[in-house]
Figure 1 (cartoon, rainbow, N blue to C red):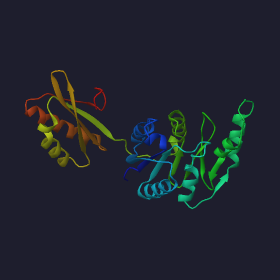
Figure 2 (spheres, rainbow, N blue to C red):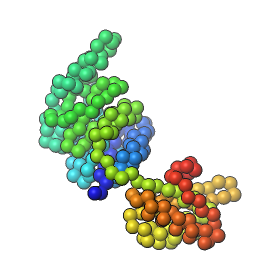
Figure 3 (cartoon, rainbow, N blue to C red):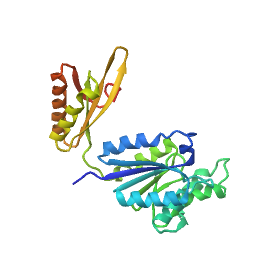
Figure 4 (tube, one colour):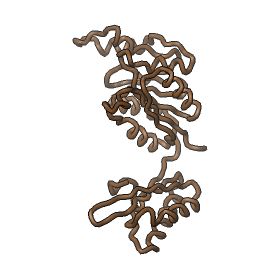
Length: 256
């Protein structure tokens, strides 16, 4: 069976304005890859009702799993919950369990559980809750859409609690072929190696340092043996040109 596919939707005007730097896409992408889930798209969209609804509908239909971050807090611009409910034709309800968790969280504190904070207990009807061990306000799952908070530490805690429930697949094998030669010189070699090894993809990243330049070619595939064979073929082709080429796990050298 093919690996599940996924999309990420980051929701928030503050990301698009540059005021807040997104730290969720990269982290989620890494976790999904380890899980054998193929991330196919990542989009950053504003806090605009129509755009959220349309994007959720589109990506939910196109992929096995969708993960969203942002827009489920207590303020007026936190509209993700109502938009995702609308995308699935559901109404939003005050969820008894979500409310109970929040009441317990704010009990015996100096923080008022006011109307704004009570809003975080509003969940689409029929959705399953995602635990939030840090600040209690839960995320939720509706259909194939998994809704997380935007704060990176909270999103990560939510995901870790959900990880074992997610479908998985074969984790991608990724190898870096460090080549002491420019990518323009080895472009045809990379292309021919990719064509010759079914299921393998090769991407390249040039690097520069004083007096030296080269290419980090990343060879990726689901079959470890085929992926290694492709990496070895690429390295041999580079060496035939008289340049050094070393195979190592992705990221070991800090460049790729």
